[in-house]
Image 1 (tube, rainbow, N blue to C red):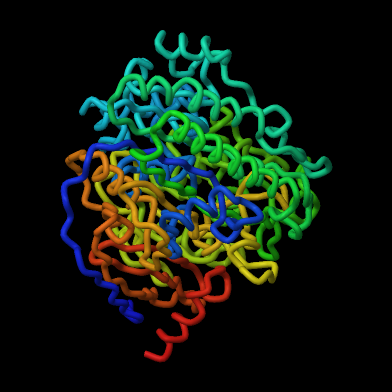
Image 2 (cartoon, rainbow, N blue to C red; image 1 turned 180 degrees about the vertical axis):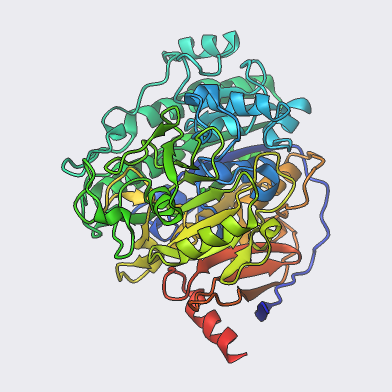
Length: 610
């Protein structure tokens, strides 16, 4: 029997809870991809620190699990959780060959062409929900999304002409990119800016097991995006004289932390070396540039600025004492370490089935080869796989296209024998399986159009022992990157703890809010700030962050724990979460002792006491 332990009910009601109708104003949503909350201070990120001291700093923050970029981008863009949007990872199983991804069944969705293909397949809108930019444009507001390829487009992904929302990302000016309107081309020319976005240059170099990755932050590309926003887009919006919403998605520090070459093969300093710190300073500079432009354009007093990150970050571990894959030799993989695609390799071995590469036209994989992008098709026919693994990093998605309940139990049993596994979540359609929790417990079972995973696998995480464990987390990662580089995606508190702050005419001043908040809440809050009414198809939604709004009410919240039944080996998946009304916020989850999360040991002990 699953047990739920409620504790720490906090009553924080304030007077003046009645909400007046919001005045028309502007909104800037600034996303610092992969920024850890514990790294934001006056030394590392002075602009962000000042913004949150002047306005609101959310101290109880939550990225949605799986803690990847595209899932959290869809949450911000729609206000819905992943069970409704179907964005279960950066890489998902689509059940059809995606042209823009080389006919892969497991496409990586940080791509403008791939997003177009997936939209076309799923009734023109694979998310099945309207985004805030689409609704704002329809209501006559000026809209723009600038920055990192993939998440930037998600905010208005169904309009690809370039004539509605302004979209500028890595693919701008290149084949497959969203075109620029003549109006924006003219503005860029007048500002002396090219119509083709620069590449990441050396920042995009991840290195190898023998060669360190980048030692440079993503300065040039992000300076271009900041210039586009401040020298072309904001002046255009000011002259239009209409309310606007601008999304700025910074690739740093995420991209640099992934590729950094400060710690090749070593867990320390990991993602806390000088290159990662330079990336944090880089994104802080971008925000300072944007805030200065708002002031210079006379827009600061009428603009709400919301700061967030999509997820936290951890250092990669590639070590396992139980993995079959770690006993094999692979080119470019240090001896004894697990290769990219270790989960698919181990499952194929345990099930006695063939392994095929979905990103190489379904090619069969020899014993000394790993999947090119870590994804795997398992069975006898790559066109009709029994098991599909969509590898993502700190967690993986396992699909069973045939819905075979007996096979699901075999897969779960195989996974529980691995020391790198820490918690399993299974579709209710496969029946209750000891040692696992249902996908519905973490808001992954909803109204999504895309195929729902059968099993979500969380990987082991721990800290290297610093004073704030969420800033020095480590996780086993299914990735082509190296041990010592950076990743995210797990149910570690180092990955679920993101940055959230806000400043502007709609927000309180000098508030540190302890109420739980998430990226899904931002979509709902921005819709209210802009006066948008967006009908929802799914029911898994965030809430308006009233506690942060001027004259807004502060809700009560509670902490809780959910435990699975133990499996035959005694494994228990434990979920630590919080609630505000019907809205859930997920702190951390996994097997006790294998997941980094300050709440997990205490709540597990409390559960055992009951």
